[in-house]
Image (cartoon, rainbow, N blue to C red; front, side, top):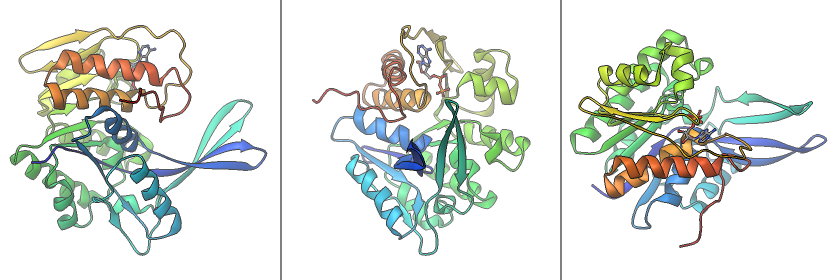
Length: 302
Ligand code: ADP
C-alpha cells in the first residue's frame, strides 16, 4: 500500500460574479476541498489523488491543470469523449447569494461506471475519502460498484472515510439518501457528519445520537462536528468530546467541515492520535472560517 490519500467525487466549475454581468471562473466541490487541504496538511512523501471523471474539452483540461497545480494527482481521473464537467453560477441580489446548477449531465456522474478503472484508481490508496455528494451523483448501479471497490480496498488494509454531507435535492428521494448513506457508513473506518445536517434529515436529538446511529450501522469511528460546539469522537469502546477554540471573527463558513476532515485525517494518518487529529481539524477549520472562500491559502511555507 502506498502513502496515498485518494478523494473521490465531483469538482465543478464555479462562476462567481465580479461585476455587472461578468464572472470569474474557479473550481469547487466538497471532496475537492478536502483533497486540496489534505495536500497542504500531509507531508510531501504522501500523494494526494482525486478520482472523478471529466471530458476531453478545454474546460475539463483547465480543471485538470488546476488540480495538478494544486499538487493533486489526476492519474485516477476518467476521461470521457462525449461529456464535460458540471457548472454552477453564483448570483447576488441585495447581498444574498443564490446558486444555479448545470450538473445533471456532468462527466463526474460516470466516475464509477467502469469497474476496472475504479478498482485501479483505489488499488494502492492508504485512505479513500468520499461524501454523500459522491454517492448522490452516481446512478444506482454504480453505487454498488463503488461500495464493492471500498470493500475490496478495506480487505487489503486501506482505511475509508466518509462525510455524509446530506443534500436531499441531489437524491432521488430522502429515503434513498438515508438508506444509501447508512449503507456507506457501515463500510467506513471514519464517518464524519455535521450535526446540523443529521438533525435536519435523520432527526437525531443530539450529536451523541448521530454517533450512535452510525456506529450501529457498522462504522468503526464517528467524528461528529457541530459548529462551535464540542466535536464528539465515538467508537464502540470509547467516547470523547473535544471543545474547539472559540473563533472571534467569522467571515465565511464555506468548507469548515471539508477542511476539518482533511486536517483530521492527515494528522491521523501520520500520528494515529485522535486528540491531536481533532485539534488539527478544528484549528484549520477555525482559520478557514475567518477568511472568504472555500480554498484559503493559510499555510506557512515549510
Ligand atoms: P460544516 O461546514 O460541515 O457544516 P461545521 O459547521 O460543523 O461543519 O464545522 C466544522 C468544524 O469547523 C467544527 O467542528 C469546528 O471545529 C469548526 N467551526 C465551525 N464553526 C465554528 C465556530 N463558530 N467557532 C469555532 N469553530 C467552528
